[in-house]
Each structure stands twice: as C-alpha cells, then as structure tokens.
Figure (cartoon, rainbow, N blue to C red):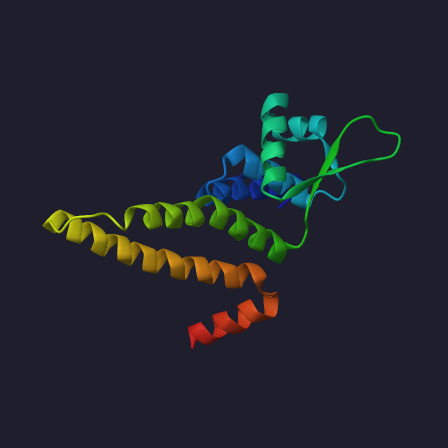
Length: 166
C-alpha cells in the first residue's frame, strides 16, 4: 500500500473511532492528521489535506485544544499559526479519558446526588431511589477506575490487564 493511501485510510479510521468517543468526525480526522505529521501544520495545510473549510478547521482545532490534545506552535518568522498533537498515544488515551470523565461521568454523578434524596414512599419513589443507588454505585466505580487510569503509567495498565485476562 502506498503512503498516501495508508495515510488516508488511517485518517478515515481515526475519524470513525473519534465518533465513538463523542468527538465529531472532522475533529478526529484533524487530530489524526496532526499526530502523524512530522511538523506542526497551519490551518491552510489542514484545510488542503482534509478538504474542509477554514471555519470547520478553526472550530475543531479550538475544540481539540480544549480537550488538551492539540497545542499551538510558534514558528519564528511565520505570521500564521501552526498546530501539533502529542505523539505519546498513552498520554492521548489518558487525556481523552480525563475529558470524558469531566464531561460525562462527573455531571451524571452530580445529577444523581441532587435527585437521590427524593421524598415519599410510593412504589415509584422507592423504585426511583433503588435505581439511583444502583446508578450511583456503578458510576462511582467507573469514576474511580477512570481516576486510576488517568493517574497510571503504562506498566500499571498492562500489568492490570494481564491479571484480568488470566
């Protein structure tokens, strides 16, 4: 397979994977392009490579920066902005987990905390409390697991994974 074809396939696959993370496809494709680039890229270079509009690139690069996955690079003598992505896939995975925890797990825990003290003793209220307790238990365990993953190093993760697979 030629490099250009392999690159296009990888960018498409990463875009599809990103959709599973709750990130839009273009945002994931920009991330893919940046992680395989040997040099920081300008907005124009990203636009040309992915055939997307300036607004779309700018919006998605800002979002990637908010996620902590992309950073702005200053190149002496250049007026344009350039962007790069971290190359340490372990760190990328931990950063994605950290953001997903912040955006998804923490808000549901807050919501459960607010509603679990509902008053009453009807069958519906008792079932509601029971379900909120189960959801809180599950979500708290997910939160703890994500915390451990975010703070972990690669060796801990693989050691734990191998233990689970036995």
